[in-house]
Image (cartoon, rainbow, N blue to C red; front, side):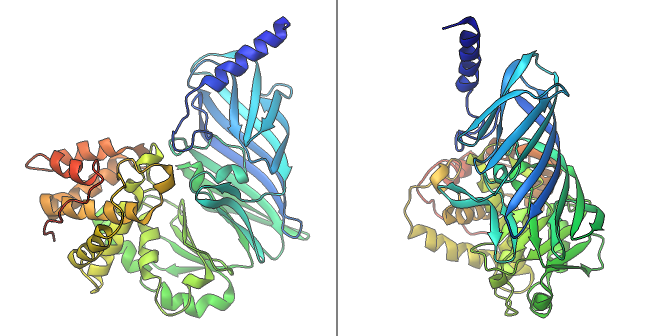
Length: 453
C-alpha cells in the first residue's frame, strides 16, 4: 500500500471508529462538528419530482477533523462540495452518507463553512417505523421528518441534539404554495414560478424542519398575541372552522400551564388534500391530513397533542431518542388537560381508562429506554402521560405546573434528558421521588395507579 493509500485508510478508520451520536440511529449524525445555521436555496419541479439546489452550513469543529460526514439520502446526489471557500473538496457518497475529506486537519473549535450542490428525485427513507421524509402527494409534496427523514431533502448533521437556525428559499411552480418553518420574509413571482423565502431564527433540530407544497390558501385565524394561521385547500375552509375552532382556547390554556409560546413567528396549521395516517409536528407547524378535517370535531385530541409539541419536543428537545417520553408523554398529558378544561373527561378519568389499557398490554416496555423498535409505541405516550399524572398527584397542582413552566423556560430551544427532568423535579418535591421514577421510568412492570387529581 502506498503512503497516500495508507493515509487515506487511516483517515477512513478514524471516521469509521467514531461512536454513534445516538445509539437508536447509529448511522445518523456526526459528533465531530456542530452546525449553527443552514441556508437552503432549492428548486422543486412538481410534475417531474425533481429537487435541485444548494445547502450552506455554518459549523464549528468539536474535535480535530481530517474529514466529516453529512447525512444525505441515496436518492439525492451531491455534485460539488466546498469547505471554507476552497476549491471543491474530495468526497464520496453511499448508504445515506456524504463523506468529505479535508485538505488539512482542522483543530477543535475551528470554523467550518460547507456548501453542497446537489439534486435528484427525492423519495421517503425506508425505516423500521415506516417511510419518513420527503413524500409526493397527489398534487404537491410534504416532508415528515421524524426521526431521520431530513436527509431525504437536504444534506445535514441529523440528530436531535444538533439545533440550528435556518433560511429556506424554495422556488416551485405556480400556482402552488410553499410552506417552510419560520417567518415568510419574501415571496417573488417570476414567470411560471414563485420563490418563497422563510427565516427560522430559533434553534431547530433537523427532523423538525419541513417543506410543504400544495394548492393552498393561507389565512390568519386568530386575533391573539400569538399569530395563528391556517394553510389548506380552499374547499376545506368550512370543515376547518368547525374542527379547529378551539385552537386559540388551547393556546391560551397551554400558555398558562406551560409558559409563553416559544416561537416568534407564531403557529401554523396545515391541512393537506391527501389523507395522512397521523398528524405531523414541525417547528411552528402542525400538519394534518384531509381525514383529520371532516367538520365532525373528531380530531380535537390530536389538535391539542400537536400544539403541545411546540413546547415539549420542539422547543425542549431530547438529546437522545431514548428519552422520547419527554416529548410524547407530555403532549399526551396535554390532551388530558385540555379535555378536562373544556368539560370532557377529567385527567383522573383518562388516567384510569388508559391505565386499564396498559395493564392489558405486554409489560415489556421500559419508558426511560424503550429501544428504537418501540420508541413510537402507544405505550410510550400513555405511560408517559400516566407518569406525569402520578407526579402531579405527589407534588400537588401548584408545584407540578410550576415545574412544567420551569422546565419549558430552563431548556427553551435546547436539549434535555430524563435525568435533567427528574433532577429538576426533585426541587419541587417535599419527599424523595426516586420510588416514583424507579416504578414508572426504570421498571417494565406497571405499578399501581395512585389516586391523583
